[in-house]
Image (cartoon, rainbow, N blue to C red; front, side, top):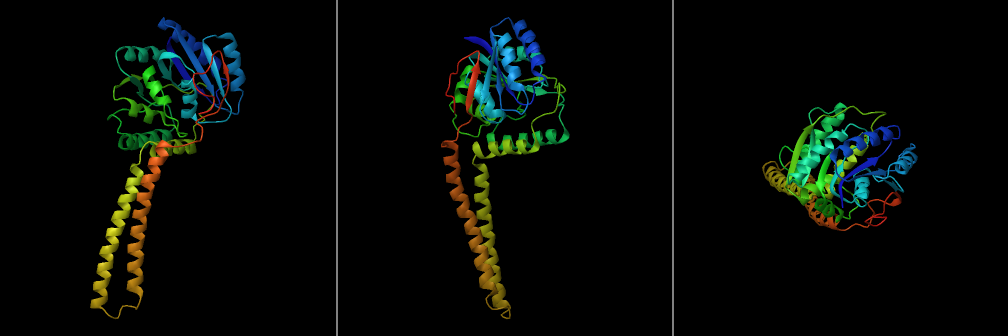
Length: 315
């Protein structure tokens, strides 16, 4: 078994990849352990796949995985997890904002007995909207996923092979890796590191993709939003009954109130509240089905360079 596997989703980073491979080789050679790096090409519009193919031809420790269509960062990482063979697995970005030199520190924490190690950044080199969005996502994740207090869910993380195996058991199409990790273990450690400027170009993570990822977390790993809808229905129904009672009293005190108005408003308030309640209850069941049953693949894998796959070509 290989000691360390590094899984990196690649999107729009063709100019960075040669420098990334060079720095990874230096950092991983210094570990003194067997290693591999899996680069997952997520159908970016640039020349990334040809660069990956060239690097794999000259670096036998590199594996290249080509996806047939864009699957998104978390789904692409799942494709990489399906072909990696390491005792420890590290995931990181392809833009060198995560330093390969910190991989040794992650491995050290995992050697110490932790199942998972997240890298916490002292100061993030992202735009303001990204930092604000991350804080919001962190607060929501605390509520939905019951993650440990103070744990920042970073894409620069490491975990043991057993956790990888638990993650690969999930076959739903909407992957949120941190949700799978938090559901698999509470033995999670952290370490502090520097966040660096992007080596070249700009991030492929847009606001719409960030919102989409947040929706995956909210709807695929928790039914609490549906419970909120149910509670809103109960509250609306209760207010409807209170308002109905008040309108009946008003009709008795002021008989000149327009004929038919009271009964119409009472019907609207009561039925509206009951409909919201019914929709919430139905949504509760639909949410449970969504969490367990789905036939849409997570990704569709094509060519695998310098290795063979452990899992199916489509999941």
